[in-house]
Length: 131
Length: 128
Image (cartoon, rainbow over all chains, first blue to last red; front, side):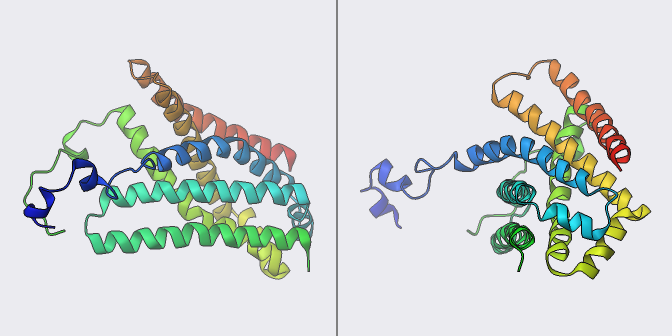
């Protein structure tokens, strides 16, 4: 990329692949969308938690195994994972300026967010489908 | 990208006098990070419930203990505070709330998060 070749390029050619390419607001939008979804899902999750309060482990297990409760927890976890993945990415990009460490943390962030989500979804599927 | 490290930086937190709006913004981020880490606890709860009844009974016993309850109380507050902070962000996203009312919104976030947390716990003890 020397100055002699960049002089031949149009402004559009120079920015292609570097800019938003119509997806620049994707994280912004998804953060709001999951934030909105998290409000009813958190209330639903709390309702599930309330029904386990004061129960022994076997009864609490039975609550978590009810299909609708498992479904609510799964949605809560998935929406939450997307939301926290984007949120933590913003924090990392704000505070970590070394390229290598930033890349490593961004990878760990995504592995953690979706690893947690996968573990929770697996757990509620197992709880509700048994076996 | 090898950039010189000596470029001037924009002023950051330490040079400003703390204000309630600033504190609520910082706490919003901090609670987000706490909720992020706390998902490990949720995963442990669900995984033990699904896979190991003995471990699940121990986890349930831990959440019933004093330490467990303190952690859950803190987690509840972080969740409520972050949710109210999110509502504040929705107001801003709609183009409102940038005037003096932002002070009131910040105070409501703090006071509301404490009151709602206490209400949720009162409800929790009443359904027990």
